[in-house]
Image (tube, rainbow, N blue to C red; front, top):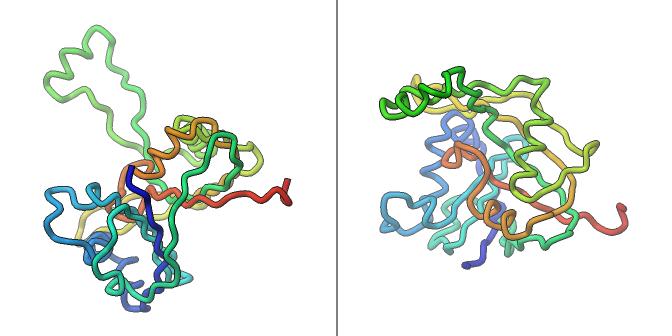
Length: 216
C-alpha cells in the first residue's frame, strides 16, 4: 500500500476566506497541484483529504500521490510521512466530521424489499441531536478499530461547511478523543479513506498524534 504524506500549509488570508465561504473552491484548490489525468475521481485516486484551520490560516492535506506543484497551495510549513498506528498504540485523534445520520425507518419489515426497488425506502439524513453526539462519535470510532477513553472525548459546537450559491451547507462538528487502537488494519484503511461524508469539502481527515508515555 502506498505511503501517505501529510502537508501543513500556510495559506493567505484571501485564500483562507475563500475556502471558508466556499468549500467547493477548497476542493479545487487542494487538487490543483496534482496531474489532471486522474480520471473521474481524482481525490479518491490520490487519497487526498484535507482540513482547514481558519484561525491559524493553515491547511492540512494528506495524499498518497506526490503533488507536482505543492507550492500552489501556499507556503509549505511541514511535509511528513503519515504513519499508521499499530495495535495497542495510544493516540489522540482530531476530526471534523459530518454530523448527520440516517434514522431507522418506520417502514414495516414486510414492505421494505418492495420499497427498495422503487428507491423510496431510504430515510432522510438528520442532524445528530446534541445530547447524542458523544455516544454517536464513540460508536463511529469503535467501528474503525479505535477505543475511546470515555472522559477524553470532546465534541465542539455545530458548524456549517458552506457550499457555493444556494446549495445547502454540510453540518459538522470538530471532535477530539484519546484512546487505543484495537484493530490496526481497519484503522489504517479509514485513515487513508477518511470518515463520514463530505470528504471533498474538508471533512473526514483523521489527524492522528501519538500519546507519549509521560502522559500516562
